[in-house]
Length: 175
Image 1 (tube, rainbow, N blue to C red):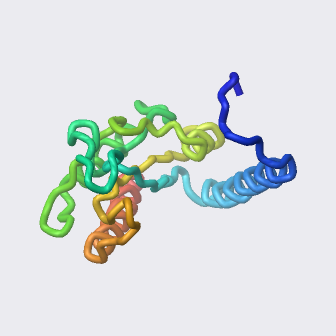
Image 2: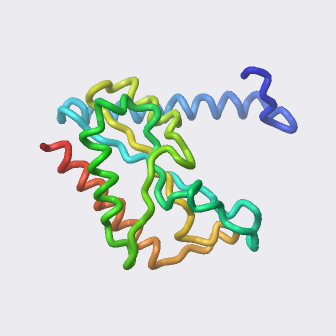
């Protein structure tokens, strides 16, 4: 892998083989699932939800500067952006307008992360013009990222936000 040292000590070859097989199995399963969706619908959206740390200097350290750490980072670099602008642009606007426990979230595109993950790439390569995968990277404002303790009110709002986002994406696709 271009000379990048990934491990302090090389993992057992059997572990590597099992991990590689698990990875291949996941993508076969995902492909089968999306094949079925693609057969029933002219277009579909996958919300690829992740989170990221923004208090990287330790539990008492300063969080990342807000200009570098939106509440929601929309990663779009693996998609043919012009083909999906009709969906992505109004979806981001709707997300910005969502009432998240009495506040509006900072939703920006390709700031903290660019959406270059394997799953989004897979969707765009396997389902060109049909499948749009949008990476949603949530800043961990909903939990203490050092202890793992969640904020129940923020998690409830996050569930509502994701439901709202999926419903909005479906409405945009139906136009």
